[in-house]
Image (cartoon, rainbow, N blue to C red):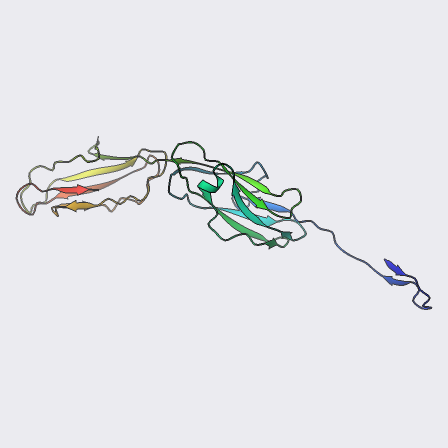
Length: 238
């Protein structure tokens, strides 16, 4: 109570009730959503990814679990590979989160090397939280090469090699050969797009070939030879 004394006969002292509520901001960081990370020990592991290709983005949730606005929010990347192999491609965090509010932060791994060793960085989130400023999260991932292997009837082919379909009557459906694409590398094999070039006497069915193959995965396609004219006919699978 605030009391103000004076010589006012009927308002001495003058009384004013004072009230207020104490509160503090409190940052909480979730990955995945609903799972709290510990400041300084939490880790986001992006696994193995082919260098030069972005790993699917991970979403980090920043929440104010305190009773006072959490201000000064800003995310940055640090550490040996933080600024070279990781990115924050989404919208920036808002400057302030009211109590109970949350915001999402997108983190992406884009390895620039394929050394098959961990590429470590740090995500730092600054805020007005007194004892967790900045909130730090370890980032790790491995950049690696994919390794394509192509087989025909179980025999592994070499790039630039050839397959002989033999002799076939003009205009008559011939032997269909089955080819298998396998990813022998530790990273995903991406942007797969086989094509035929050259003579039109060869017909391919690439309908079962996905654009990406995980490590150890395989897919098959077929090529059929139906000669249109006599003589040696050539085409190239690329």
